[in-house]
Length: 88
Image (cartoon, rainbow, N blue to C red; front, side, top):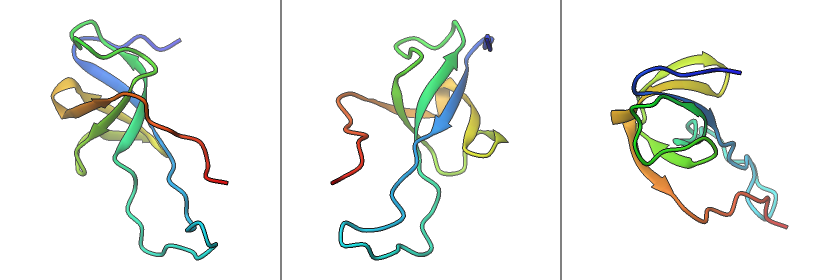
């Protein structure tokens, strides 16, 4: 288990579909700016593990592919009721 300190967040990027509903590939797509909080430090009020957040484009430190270490101030919004299921 990872235990974060101070105002740090460990965030796993949420993958976005690489194709449209009709099956066309989307080229040149940037990495998503949405992520699921894996762990957060005690100085992150209002954010809990499992929350979906939006963060800035050039913020954080990538520690693994699609896993970032962010500061609390880099979290722009917490999103409720986000449908993360693949479209059918």
